Length: 179
Image 1 (cartoon, rainbow, N blue to C red):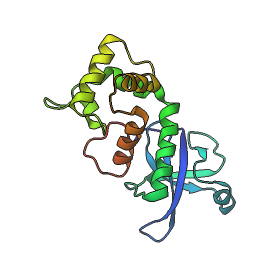
Image 2: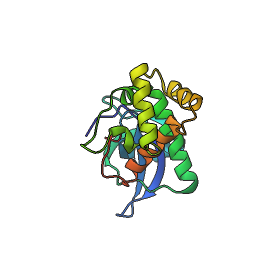
Image 3: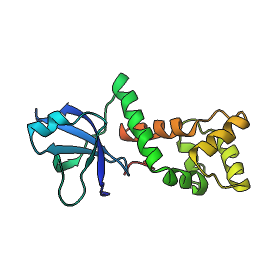
Image 4: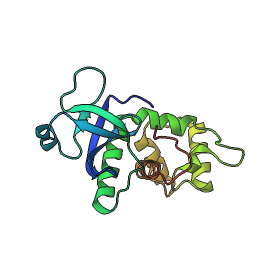
């Protein structure tokens, strides 16, 4: 498992053993983790969306990481909140995603890695490949502007977020972002 330094606290879920499980999502690899807090007081201080330190050394509120969480099951407002957190993480790690758009290759003989992102069909794929040959993509906003200028129906941040939600919820075979 990839080590996470920080997690964004998402929610409390009732575990299959009847205990409360506290779920967080890693801030660099989107790893869904079950957390154990130091005390009841700490649990009450933390609100969904808080960024918590879980790395080596002294931790303020998280006692331990129990392990990887089961695939997440979010609906309605929870789903929207999850996408907001994912958008925040994508923005914090923008270089990683820009590199993906600039350097991704064929995933198999018949499929390109970019085509795993919702909204990337043959036309959008051809457009992105053409654009990155002309000039490397500088930012997610740069790709968004190029798409808008050429009437290409693709919103990079939104579509990346959708892909990561699919991976977190266990609805894809391939995981390209969630570790």
